[in-house]
Image 1 (spheres, rainbow, N blue to C red):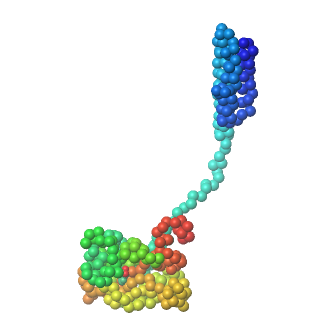
Image 2 (tube, helix red, strand yellow):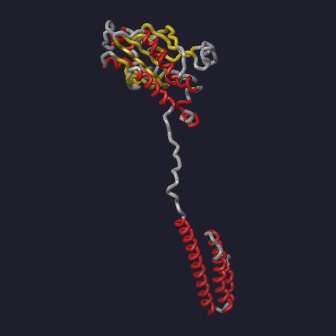
Image 3 (cartoon, rainbow, N blue to C red):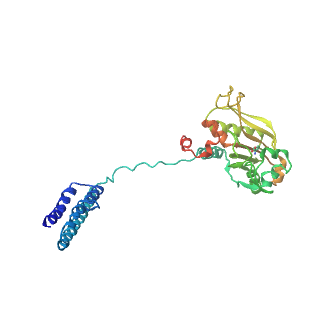
Length: 340
Ligand code: PHE
């Protein structure tokens, strides 16, 4: 019996030496299992118990309990020691608060926002004040007042969502002309950027896009003022001596009306795939305000004349920055956005 007891007691010392060099919790727990587990060393010895006379068994049992307690204590002590080592190392770590901060990647304005602000700025230098209108507007502001009555065929090119028969997603920024003329006395010079909506969808057209509308109303506004203003804008925006041409065209709200073309910025006018070998690229519509529109907006067309134009900002930015698909603007892909 005494052999068994002393063997049990030895296990306590043995465990101590086994775990002394162990430095992680997993290894310590594994060692503990080798001693206290079902098939561990303590259980192995206890198999001898049956061979002893019953009277001696309690003494051995007590010794076994004691060695179990010792092993538990040794385990807890060693784990505690390790935790303290880690805590001390943590506290000893020094942080250099004088190091420069890690740079945080800053955002920036979207290309279209940059181009919009820049375009408004160029017109502001010519005396145009920025104006805005709602993207949901009345059928009257968007069409009727601009001489596009309900059944007018020119409405086909600007089909849109009707929220009700009288409320539409605006198809152009021209309703801002109407809103301005109804609330301001001439002289008027406004530049109105904003989103517009149409039934269009291909690499150069999107169902939602951004227009830039201009309107000047005064006692002696002429067609050459219109041309000079647009020419100045194109030269400033592209920072190049590009020509423009005004090609006769029809918009119900201007007379005469024109499509605005600029000399192709890719080939300089000699002809390429982009300008379909014409040397010219269409950038918008323009013309002299129709007297009917003045009448609708309570402006005396005997006294005042005016010009108006509308351009697509996506198109302008595509031409200047070689953007090949209008969808890139709206996808939010950083690989695109970060280039500008
Ligand atoms: N609103 C016209 C369009 O979107 C463009 C335009 C504006 C034409 C002003 C003439 C005058 O197609």
